[in-house]
Structure formats: C-alpha cells, structure tokens
Image (cartoon, rainbow, N blue to C red; front, side, top):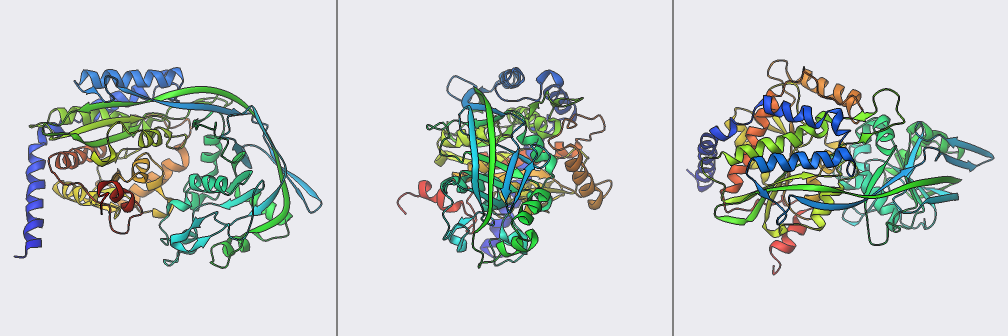
Length: 548
C-alpha cells in the first residue's frame, strides 16, 4: 500500500470516528427549533430586518439573547456587536434616464426600464447630457490579457456595460474561465472599475441568463432605501450615477445609435473589441434623502480548549430588504429563506458545538452579518476590520438560503475546486452516504454573491455550502425545478415567507454535515490551502508566509 493510500485511509477513518463522536451534538439540530426561529425572524414584527431600523435592531437583540442563553461569550471583546457605519440613501423614484441623439429623445422610466442612484453622500446629483460610451464587459484584467478601456478616455462620460464576462458569452474555455463566472463578471466589480476609470455614470445592461436573476430582482433591490459603507471621502470617488437598464431598453438605445445590439454584444466578447462612443448623451437627475445609520455584525464565541487564538468562522447574514411602503398589498420583504434560515442555522450550530463530547481545540466564531443584501457590506467591513487576525482565521463557512424541499442525495459546494475545504466536505458527505457536487450553474457567479466572498478576497479559505438537488423522494429533475421555480417567483420578493409545506429535513442533514466539517477543522493543526489556480492563494500566502 502506498503512502498516499495510507494517508487517505487514515483521513477516512478519522472522519468516520469524528462523525460518531459528534452524533449527540448533531442530534441537537432539529427541524422544530429551526422552524421556531425562522418563524420569529421572518415575521412581520421584524419588518424585513433592514439594518438600522427597529426591525433590524430587534434582530440583533434576538440573536444576542439566543447566543447568551447558549452560554457563548461575546465575540468582540466584551460586546456581542461590531458596529458597521452605514449611510442610507433613498433616491426619489422620479429619476428617469433620458437619452438623446440622432434627432430623438427617449425617456427610460425608473423601475420598468431603468433603476439607479448614487453612492455619493450628497442631496442630489445631476447628470447632464453626458456622452455615452459602450465599453463591452467593462473589464480590465491583465492576467487574461483583457482591457475594455484601452485607448478610450471615459472621464466624465457614461459607460454602458454588459453583465457577466466574455467566457459566459462564448463558452470558450480560452476566455477567462469559460462558462464559470469570474469576479470580473460581477456587477460590483463593474461599478468599481468604472469609477477607477473616471466615468460619471455606469449603467449595466440586465439580461436574465448572464445575470442569474430576472429584472424584478434588480427593480426591487434598487428601489427604496439603499445602504452603503461610508468611506472617508463620503463615497465621492464613486461614479455619480450607478444603475441598470433592461435588455429592451438597451436595444432601443443601440437602435438610436444606428447599431445592432446583438452584433455589438457579440463583438464585445472578442479580443479585437474596442470601446465605442455611441453618439448619444445621457441625462438623469437624482434627488436623495440621506440617513446616516449603522447595523451590527453579531459575534458569539466558543473558545477553543488548546488553540483559542485560531478561529473557524460560521456565518450567515441576518438582514433582508426591509419594507417598501410604495408597494400595494404586502409591503414587507420577510426574507424567510433568504436568510432567516441561515440565521437560525447559526443558533442551531452554536448549540451543537456546545454539545460536542469534547470542546473544540480551536475557537468557533458564530458571525451573524448585517447589510449583505446591500452589497456584502457587513462582511466587507469585518474583512477590513477583523476582530481576529486573518492569519489565525482557519476558514470561513457560509450559510445562505438553503434547501426547503426535503432530503437529498447530494449537497452543493459553490465554487468547488477553490480550496482544500472541499476535502472536508467530501469526507463528511461520504459519512452520510451522500456526495458533494459542484454547483450546476457556475456561470451565475454564486461564489461572489454572498458573505464568504468578503473573506475570500482577503485570503481566508471560504466555503459556501448550498442545498443539493437530487431529492431522495422525487429525483434530481424535480429538485432543480423546485429551486428554479422558487427563484423566479419568490427571490427578493415579499412572498419569501415561511410556508408550512417546507420540509427542512435535508437542511438538518446539511447542518449536521457542517458540524463534522467544523469539528474536524477545530481539532486539527492544519490550515486548509487555496487551490494552486485560485485567485485568492497569493493574498493568503503574502501574510501567512511573509518571508517566502
């Protein structure tokens, strides 16, 4: 038997023994307790859990009380809270986009064809006949030999940008990562790059397939109050206007310019693409209501017995979209699946780890994060202001909007292949008689869309575990249909409410799997590594091995 085989066998035996040792702790995770907390957090009393509102504050206090009742210690010195300074900016819904040129003037109505606003902390911004430039995917990526801004000066201009990246458009493995979205495909990056290039306005064209969600998600998410982190310059380094237009609006815009949208989009996915002035101008007036506020990350600590300075983070965001009084009928975005589920899971996991046969050798931090829905703000703030040293942070494990349709034969590792954390999941899943699969739609960039990504950006190996699709009772096709149906009907809508028909038995198994993963991480001296091809490996190595 080779040394590799012996090592693999030893790991499998270790995982099996760990699973047995953790059994009593895992049995503390129950559907009944999960449902009780989800019902509370997703009730109308919590008003959609928007940061800095009474509902948000009620959520923070609820979590503090739950963690205290379990006997956990405050995770930020003597406090359970890490204050995250935010500014809430509400743009008046009259901020229509007006495009002029070629003898025509077209108004794109706010909500149905255009959504936008500003991160600048000012009472108003005025974009007046700003020249429009089509910059393709809006990417500057030297490692891919790609620069959509090469040879063009967009200072003071309006850039129109395609969503996702050229790899998705072509499925060409030689472009970026082919069908797998890179960070350059995320809308957050596109706005950041446009600001670096000096653009006065950045407008992304929405299409459902490359974005990964319908226009209604953009419309709902960008209407009403928007929370942002405050920078030292009051966010004046951002473009004056950031927003989206629908695909139909984009076609109209390109037609006004005498261009064919589909042809220009195809050209933008080639290395010969050059940014193109459209001969049009954009105007929009944004009037703001500004409210400085804050939310709190909630931190609860289970100290390690041997290496308490080494930290494993379990996280889930507690916030959702709040309420929108302009809506008819139901005005509250209750966020039951997204993410009262993950928040309740943190409480259940904390109870489980308190009931391990032997206390974890490393510390476990349970981190309930604020302002995820506004752009991963709470996790970004923690990553920039870590309570525990990044070089001592072993791994970050995220739970966000998981399965509600019963037990599955599989579990999904979003971004599978990024790090050695996959091996821990594989072992724990195998002990359950299940398999850990990569996500089925890597083109949608889910790895970049939740709070673990803020940790990945600063080098901490991050795991995002999602529900499987291969239903034990109904099969994989049924499971995928249910997931897609929920996304199209309920995602980021007031209808995301708890339903008595939910079956959380599969979610319980997923959380029990994470107990095994966390316990194994807590009782080893190893630090899991990023994969050699990972974009985050060099960041980690820079502070883990500063002399190399």
